[in-house]
Length: 78
Image 1: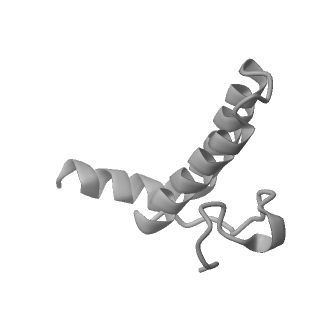
Image 2: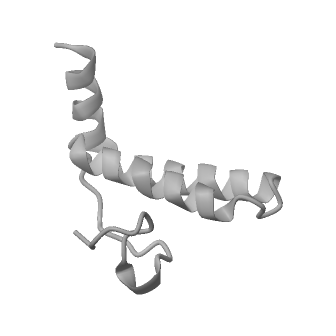
């Protein structure tokens, strides 16, 4: 089993925990920077969530504050 297969397997089993970790890490970074980079941190969190979704992580879809459910990168909602 390759490394990526192992990662995908873990993500499929623990996607909800990974999502919580992404959220907590982003919140901590936001606090540490005094909110100065909130937009960039939110973008990084969303990209990490998308990676988890593409890699087989199964989690409940959540609205993490993106206005109108739109893509923070300016694309169309998927």
